[in-house]
Picture 1 (tube, rainbow, N blue to C red):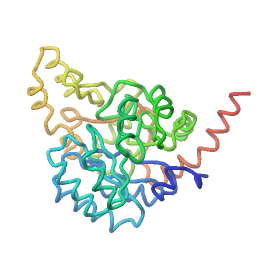
Picture 2: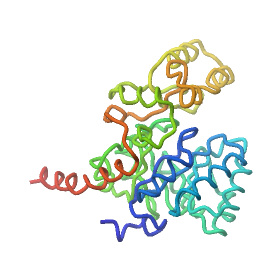
Picture 3: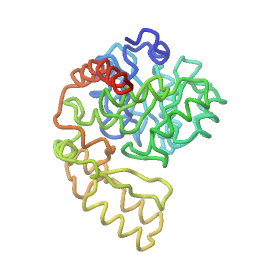
Picture 4: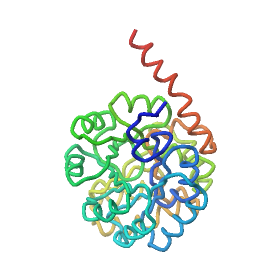
Length: 315
């Protein structure tokens, strides 16, 4: 089905399906499983120190011989060191967020690593194309974790029209219908984070996964708009306390102190009331935890039906 797909040819993968690089839970276990199933698994570096990231990369290399990548948040205090790890390990691809990867591109390109940043605007996509990135991930505000302001439906076609490099759509894509819609908008592939949170291979705490499975279409809220770094999470005690701090004009420093460690509290300790449960608006679609292989088989297997449904609705 994807023999001539630009992303598949660029990265030597079977399906143009990226697993989102999620901090704390985008580990070697999940990344290798996605790559083995034909997609592109991505280790979420987050604030990982370089030695921890290298250990995750080595584990993934033991568990898969397929291409996989690392997502690097350019605001990380370890960004230079983790970029050096990626260069030394000669990974297939790096996805980036929260900044401009320009200064790292020459070294990455020298070892054959493809650079694919996440963008939330047309202007950023055009700027990054000029500095030599290989593709961009156009991520809409429906996604979980750190978000922009523009919806996926509005952002993707505008980015597709503005650049001459492949575009991967992200945000609010949870099944084969979403993938078909992304292709209809002109995307060459999709990135899915929330869908893989409720997989057997994801190491997120059982409480985290169960809360996602119980979530509905309006279960998420956005915190941190006052800091300039908004984040989509499931509404809970923590988000209500955070909102109260924002309403009382807490400083950015106070908000950052309040939020420190909250993601780990939820993902690893299972405290889903006081922790940060990052997930996209698509979470109301998920009913059960499945193996990654089954998830990807369902996604690909349902594509023909989703495409046929588009044709039927046009008659």
